[in-house]
Length: 336
Image 1: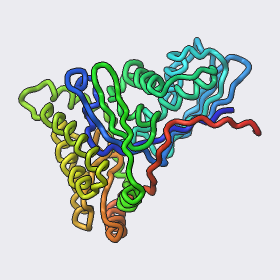
Image 2: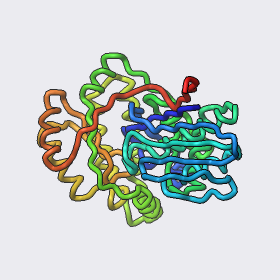
Image 3: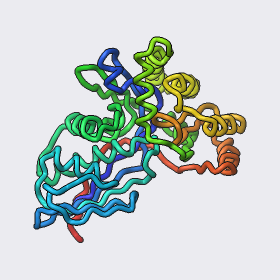
Image 4: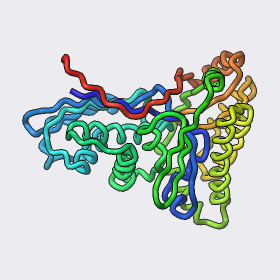
């Protein structure tokens, strides 16, 4: 039996420039850090060539089914697409779940797809390079499941850690960012994450963004250029251990992101933002494409309780987390 684990991520800048519609014409850059929140897959081989799936997040069960009879069932679309794309024809039971709810804005769907590719490769006794795993996961999500996603989340899940990603028409480059221990500890102490919920699927916002990008009457294309340049500035600030600059850039990046499309922000998000800033947040941003999900807040530790208490009163719950450096992993369980 195998257990696959892949991390989620918090993006610090450049979101939107990892979309092919942008980086096939202009180089894109993003910076993100993976966290100790994961997607999980438990895979147990069967002897009868049937596939069975369990997805508690969607309260869904795929009964033992022949590969030729597999159809999309909510909670199992990723598994079915992955098995077919990876040409896996053996029997297997699969249990899939995530540490966060769907539409979290933390890259959970792409993490799960990357996790699945990694697990299937292990079942097939194949070994691929990390780039190959990330690109295959992206292909499944973008081209087969039609999610309209960028490439950041798959690469973040596979590589793990704090990275600057560069996107070009030719491919993706991964450049790890090394923090000294004091800076890492300060970043961790000042970071907060809140579940704000009410997020519609990011595809709607991303579709608007792509449409706006080709409309000269909007400022979306210029905002994406600004977002890309900001990611490079975030990279420099972190490499120089300058967290004051990092905080300033987070605020600037959130203002830029709001220009991508309607729906990135909304009255509820604006209310949460205003309340957090009033009670001590130095900077903040909504993770993912926007519209809801989770909000990242950066504040002095002495302000954390005040921010947490005030947001809790309006139904916004703090999510405890820590940063981590490892990407997708496979664990062999032999004693069950």
